[in-house]
Length: 252
Image (tube, rainbow, N blue to C red; front, side, top):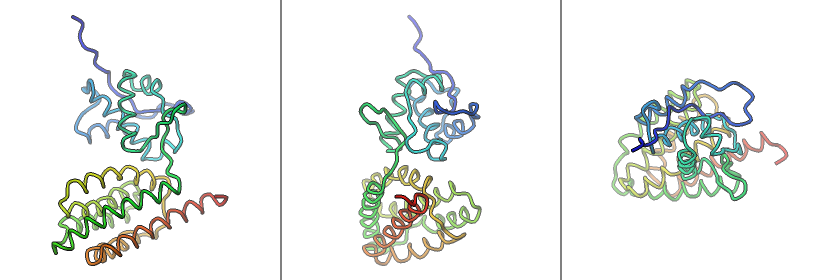
């Protein structure tokens, strides 16, 4: 009886039109190890996790720009996996909304236009407001929020924008998790990749330390009056992103 096929070790994804030599496999390896497994011993469905992690890294690092096509056959050849494995990886990224699948156009890195941005922020507002209302009514302070704020300040001071994005997400997740509502937390986490994608390509112009200072004030206001504070905070960030887009694309 023939042995079942085992996908060989993964390599990082390289878009078809890349003119430079294939980059190091370190980003994919780091992503895989962060997920608790190594490419070299990752057969079957777990191979799709490694491919998805490599492509996710390329998207959230900005190496794969919005609109970049992602083709099954190229992923398969680049990573040395089956078409089925590549298709599974793309399906996972589609579920995260990092990529978009369209009839006759295939799969591409997602691009959040202005309407999509506003809709995303409206959903964040609804979820975060309800979570903070629960927290306020309990009269408790989120146990992880102060550590998250300190991490945000440290990341911002270091000038590391990806780390700043991660710490920024930690602050908001600490507030949401404090409600102890698994459904709210689950739905909120579904938005995390989209927010990272958006902020990767549209970096607001904050003076050093301004983001941490703003969020320290936001936490205190949101714990006292979530209905007003969350909406004001997200309206402000939405406008900052829109303004940043306008500055980058004056003809918009």
